[in-house]
Image (cartoon, rainbow, N blue to C red; front, side, top):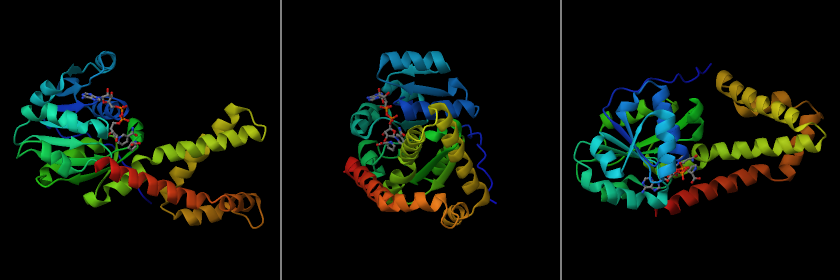
Length: 277
Ligand SMILES: NC(=O)C1=CN([C@@H]2O[C@H](COP(=O)(O)OP(=O)(O)OC[C@H]3O[C@@H](n4cnc5c(N)ncnc54)[C@H](O)[C@@H]3O)[C@@H](O)[C@H]2O)C=CC1
Ligand SMILES: O=C(O)[C@@H]1CCC=N1
């Protein structure tokens, strides 16, 4: 039996800055607040003024310019698009000082890229999170850069374990991890959408089809986690000889769904590499 992950309260690590408060930045921010961090210990850098106002109203956090965020913080989490990382690092570099920790959550961006743009003595950690962190069911993978210490990695793990499970991995695996757990929620939502549409096609009301699909996904995911049983075994348990499931699975094979997942995840891994090149 695998125990569900219990969100932990992050250790007190001084002020944390979140630069880039879009989907993932807000996910991190709200998770830290749910885990008991005080809004006074958090500071946000966000370039869209209307978004900045929204975050201050919703969470009571200070939104300041990026330089000020870097000045105030001990740990700076960068949650902008990979294409914006160079600009943001160049903006904040004058305020970064030895002993600070920079955490990049951007797909593809390597610790070497970040290290080349920050002063010597600034530690760098790379993270690939995912959006289920919004409901404390996130999956984050963490890799240390050249100068990251055990203490730096432990701090980032504590920050992220507030919103789900955390794995420490070699950085060489980060692009593949991005293709699995980083982008993975989108594949599952796509499957859910497809199943709901199919239910509607079979004549069910949309609301009924949605309830059936969502609970089936939650129940199946809970079985996987709580029993620890291999998915093949669980699938076989549903598949009666010459039954309905066998008929459906044959169609999934005919339509090459397995091959499609392999191609899709290779494409995501390759795109992650390109973003970091
Ligand atoms: N959305 C997701 O599921 C995941 C996203 N990520 C990574 O998180 C990062 C952000 O992604 P999203 O949140 O989806 O994008 P987003 O577009 O929702 O958020 C990016 C935010 O950064 C702000 N921004 C851009 N330039 C800025 C600057 N110079 N200073 C301050 N703020 C600036 C934008 O206004 C925006 O609010 C990306 O690097 C992505 O690879 C990683 C894992 C999952
Ligand atoms: O689509 C993207 O590039 C980001 C990284 C992983 C999930 N979303």
